[in-house]
Length: 318
Image 1 (cartoon, helix red, strand yellow):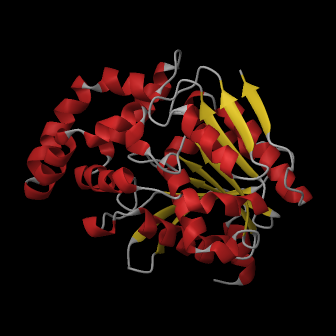
Image 2 (cartoon, rainbow, N blue to C red):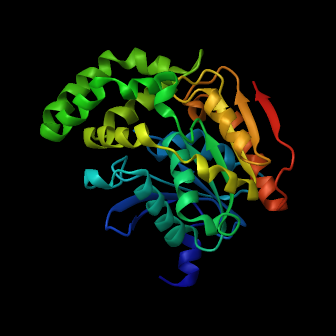
Image 3 (spheres, rainbow, N blue to C red):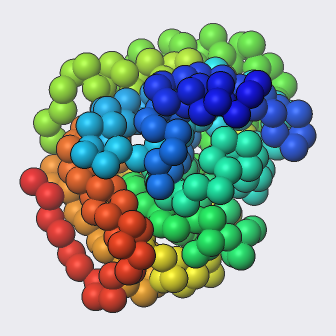
C-alpha cells in the first residue's frame, strides 16, 4: 500500500484487523482525519465491545478540531479472535494495546480513554510501559473503573462469592453446557444487570444494546477475566499519570465501581480532574455520552495546550 493510499485509508471510518505479538487477530475501527494532531484510543469494558463507544465516538467526531479516533475489540470480545484462556489477563490486554499503538497510532500523540476493564488496561499499560507516559501517551481518561479493591465494595463483592469459583470450574469442564445455561440466565437476570450497570433513568435502547453485547460474549471470556479482577491492584501506577493531563470520571449511581474508587484514584494522581456524572451508573458512556464526551474534549484541549492541570477540580455533570 502506497503512503498516499494509507493516508486516504484513514480519512474516514475504516475497519480492519491487526495481529498481536502472540498471533491473535484484533478487530480495529478508525475514524477522523489521518493527520490529526491527537489520537483518542477507546478501550471498552468486560463483556462489551467497541460498539459501546458509539454515542461518545459520534460526539467526538463532531468536534471542531476533530481528533483521530481508534477503537478495537479486546481479545475474546466482539469481532476479535478468541484466544487461549490463559491469555485473558490485564497484562496481555496491555500488550495488545501496545500492538494497536504500534501498528495503528504510530507517532501521533495518544490519549487513552478506558471504561471499566478498559481503564484497568490503561493503568496496567502505565505500569508495563512507564517510559511512554508523557511521550507517546499524552493523556488518560479513567471512566467507571478502579485501581484496586474491586471485591471490597459495590457489586464487586460478588467476586468473592463461591458461585464464581463454581462458574469458572464449570466453564473449563463443560463450556457448551454453561453457554446454553448462560443464554437462559441472561434473560432471567436482565433486571439485575439493569440495576447493576445503569442509573435511575436510562433509554431502553441503551439497555438493549448493553444486554446484546453481554449475550454475545463467549462464556470463556466472561469467566476467565473474573480471576484477574479479584487480585487486580495497579495503585502504584497512579502517581505516574500526574505527568500528563488525566481525567477520572464516574457515575454517581455506579454500583459496579462505586465513586469511592474514582475519588481514591484522583487523590493519588497529582492534578487529576475528577468528574461526577449525576444519576448515571456503570454504563455512563452509553447513558450520558454528552457528559463523557465533554470531559474527553477538555482532556484533548489540555493535551493540545501541553499544560497539565495543577489544581484538582471536581465537576458535577447533570
